[in-house]
Length: 487
Image (cartoon, rainbow, N blue to C red):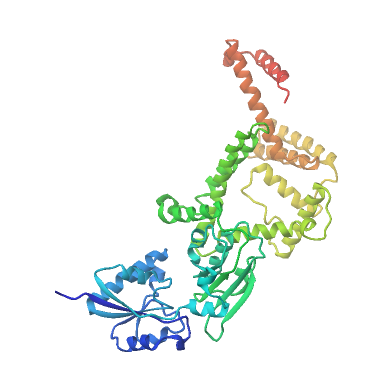
């Protein structure tokens, strides 16, 4: 009977070369075929001429696939050479999925050589007994799920990047930001850092790498939250659903617009006296929220930004734009708040050295909104009527030009341009009288829809066919409905 191929697994300790045991060094020196999971570890050089699996991290999107691929290659090499050595950072039994794959493979024989892990140094610098304190060890990549319901103490490993720390922050929705956090960086090395900071600042204090962990002594509230679950779901769908995988920022634009309009419809349909009308708004807001999550997940996979960056950006902007709440600026009325908001926006634009005066005005906005934004920006530089009179007279002037263009039957594009000037002038007047043109036109359209539906219903009750009614009959029906419509 042929003996199983053997894999001897050793750990390279927390980082310092003098933390590697003599037994591990003897195993390395006596092995002819050596493999190391990654050379990105301070004591990896001790393995000597070894094959690294660092390239596997570039081949796979998910870490689970990386570790599975490494384990399969190790198994192949073990069967080829009959005996190999595999070295991993830290201890083989602490956060080493490749080792777990090997241990559960009955086709090969595994020999484990114990090693010091980063945990040993962590307990030393923290001066705590982990058993007595009841510390739970958490993988930073799965923090939201593994830490659900926990309030500490927690030791969080695999905090190798700012986006990991940002996601950990996002997972605790009820955090005040002042909760203490201890960052453990390069433990046991000459540049070791043990920094006490806060929940708010944890991803801004140290530039993390694969030798970074955090210790959370105690949180006022346990970690949980539907936002975290949604974020995890969005990531799962992006990784496993063929349709989600195929989407891009551009392909999702139509859905973002559709969901936004559906939210507006749900708001319009709200009934202050009927709480059940909230359900539709909850559903539509959820659809819109998922669009935000979807875009953030795509960016996260591209290594550009995460949902935590989105949340931090709007948080910081709102704080910055509300000095009357978070500073010493005084604003007692909504108008004063709005005026200062616009002033702060202008100051921020001036600091960014905008290429054009209209930078930041969304070209994809609805035409009435787009026109209003352009006019407001021009008005900031003094290009505006002094009052509503000039704006009103401009409408009359543009109407006359439109009539002349229609009567003269000029160039094909002249009439649309003149009609556009009329609409643009109407927007200008609406701005001067403090009425949002977009909302005003929508209200008018909704009023027409409501009244014309009533006209159709009235005609049906009287056995009238609208298509065959005279103009006088139609006017009579409309006037009757209009009188009954008090809105």
